[in-house]
Length: 313
Image 1 (cartoon, one colour):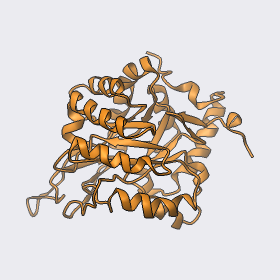
Image 2 (image 1 turned 120 degrees about the vertical axis):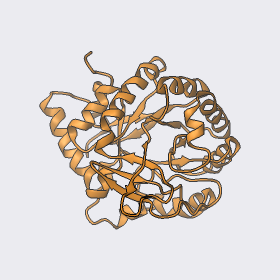
Image 3 (image 1 turned 90 degrees about the vertical axis):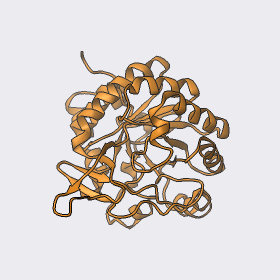
């Protein structure tokens, strides 16, 4: 068996050791139980799994339609449907940890700053390896977007969560802001251990026959290859701030190939998130593992972590 030191794709995010740089992002694999039903899925190709966004109490989510395909992308407006934090900790996590050893990361959200802290406290007494703070969800009507758009509010959320848990914190940043660097700087000062860049872009789809929005929530989050150029820029901009404090970044947004993986690392990422590509290719992690390993060998790179921030400008 290959040791971590001999594994060219091994990375570490905020003290969480990952055998590959591929993080399955929140919302794309629900609570990961569906992955167990996919024939041929190899958890050894996955570095970590971010669980579905969770609130203190159960949420039904938004009215349909909740998904809409777009050219080179996908709009979603699920609305944080989830069974509530205590159900996840008491019922779902025990089943997961009994079957897989991949690091699990909770993704938490709240309608108030105080609720974020309460949810974090629930997960503090659980087997998750870290907590991702969702301050930037564009498809709910309260919380989320407002917190992620204001540097001071974002920092306040992180401060409250930091006081509620000892687990590593990853703050998910929105691209729908005037200055992502300003938000990054404040949440780093507030105590986040890592950053997740980017969440989805705001968008909408219109049915011209009915003259109505396609999504029941009117607006939703755009993901997929269409957002990759924006994601790369935001990772690079965030890295200019994050590197001052050695804060790692999970770069995400339209990653589908080994070239995409390396591009995110060069822009400043220390791991790469996979999401929309999983809908068309559920076995993407093992495909990318093979292709990325081959590309690193071709470029004579011993460890993928060496590439972080290596963009030549």
